[in-house]
Length: 353
Image (cartoon, rainbow, N blue to C red; front, side):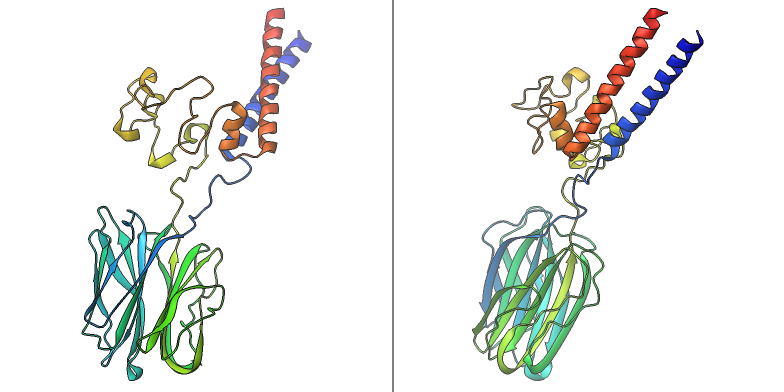
């Protein structure tokens, strides 16, 4: 009896320990499922010019709700006229940085617009007065940028020099960011941006050039860019850094009951509410939770086969899709086997009694 009692205690202890390890592995895994931040991506780019009091920009495609649009506007006029406002249906615009060189009639402005629903492709950049010489607007749409609290650091500079610059910001505070600068230069085209920036435009036009400078980073640093110009020129430059947002799907595998808690902003509170808000459907019983989802067929081993970007076809693939590596999958499989063996041993010992 003592030996049997000792065996039973051992079985119980092993069962509990195995279950704890299993739950820990499922809860935390061995690597993050998603990155901390989304990667900013440029969606489209457009250039427009004027010699009047406004610049009309027509985008090639309708901006996407939740994206941002950034405009770099360079002006040459006496007196110096900057951007008074930017108007666009469904987009809220605000100035983020600028630089004036009044003595040389140069100004560069950097604006950001947050795209909402029903956005238009037509943008009007309103200037503070008629620009007799020239104004250039360089406009880009981006995904992956925060729509609130997006601005991190700014800087500006102006001078007459053989070397232009956006100015240098203080050290940024977030690792993944989009850095955008603009430089307007008199009497010279621009080329060869420094510090890993990409340059849009920069061609000479009507006595000046305006460049749109872009860099996507994955670590904090000071932000600055210069371009190559021809001789000593008057310039004005500015730069702003914008924080990347979180990815569109940010699951947190904190526990077994939360493994899809944040998928597409859904909250699965009970087994009968798994898909309560999916496409406005109401799953009122377990037998209805996928009954109305169009074109889906749910089999025992394929209940997530067609869920976008997921393929839960087997137990092994289920773990892979969660972001676990092969080593974790093998470990979990081993634990499952141990649990089954322990359960069988416990059952066998009870039958012997």
